[in-house]
Each structure stands twice: as C-alpha cells, then as structure tokens.
Image (cartoon, rainbow over all chains, first blue to last red; front, side, top):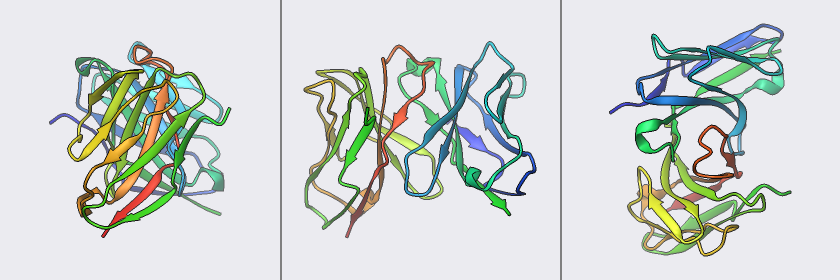
Length: 114
Length: 115
C-alpha cells in the first residue's frame, strides 16, 4: 500500500553543521505534510508543516522543502546543536482518507557529535 | 494549559488482563486519537474521535475499544491484553477534525508491556 517512508534510518552530523533529513511519500492525494521531532521518552513534537501549494517553508533554524514532482520532502536544520539529537518523523494527511488521520514514516535518528 | 496528559506512564500486564489507558486534554480540542508506536515503525492509528459521542476505527483497531463521553477525555481500553499489544501508546489531539492543516499535539505516551 501507499506509505510515507524515509531514506536514511540514522544520520550522524557534527555540531554546527547543517542537517538534511529526507522523506519520500507515494500518496499523490496528500496535501499537507508535517515534520515531528521525538526525544527519548517523549511524544512527538511539532516542528514545521507545509501545504502542497508551497515548495518551501522556513522556521527558526529549520526549513522544509516539498518537491511534488518526485514526491519528496526534506527537513533542513541549520547549525545543528546537540539538543537536535532525536528521531524525526515526516507525516502526511491524504485527502482520500478524509484527512482524519496522519500517515507517519518510520523515522530517522539524528545524532549530533560534539 | 497542561496540553495532552496520559496516564499511566508505564504498565505491565499479564496476557488476558484488561486495562484502560487514560488521555485528557485541556485545549478544548474536538479531535482526539490514539496511536501505537513499535520499534522501527512509524506511529499507527488505532482509533480516533471527531467529537464527543463520535468514534471511528483507524489502521489497527483490533483488540482496542474507545469511547468519548466528554470533549476532554478519550480513554483506550484493552479488553484482553495480548503480547502483540506490547507497545508505546500515544494520545494526540487537534482543534477540529476538519482542521487537517493544523498539527496534532501529542502526549508523552504510555509504555505497555504484556507478558
């Protein structure tokens, strides 16, 4: 079935570098996408979202890029800090499920080396 | 506001026992949902509710019951626990079901082990 997936299960970066976490989605009916951060022992925390009528959206140190042509989503974190170490999930809301549920990817673990 | 509060944080059950996972939110959100998270997998939707008195099944509903008697509370019941239900359970809410372009707010989870 269609699903949201991630290319890399673990990403290790040096403190101060930029991080890029990728996500591929296959449901062309999805029109809203979210990135969540999950720290150990906690629930997912909203980072940034983007609608399908946008290609890019920026937040504080984070940028989400959406390429609908190849069904690809990415999260860029500038000047990665140790506190950014966590598991990152992308999620989509497909129109064809009535948008009542999010479909989550399996997650990418970001490890920030000091 | 406390946000989404889940209790208990940890629970161990024996096969066949029943229990209720509690979830409460103080944000006056209409939409509430339950997800389970298993190692190496993303979160999977169990049940959801678009308002008091209305519930519906998600992707993996078998073995779980829910009810929504108030806007604030959305308990998840395991009638006869099985080892396959060992998981971390998250409750999440957003302001309205129709507000699909607003993010879900998650609780900190209940870690359930069934032996």
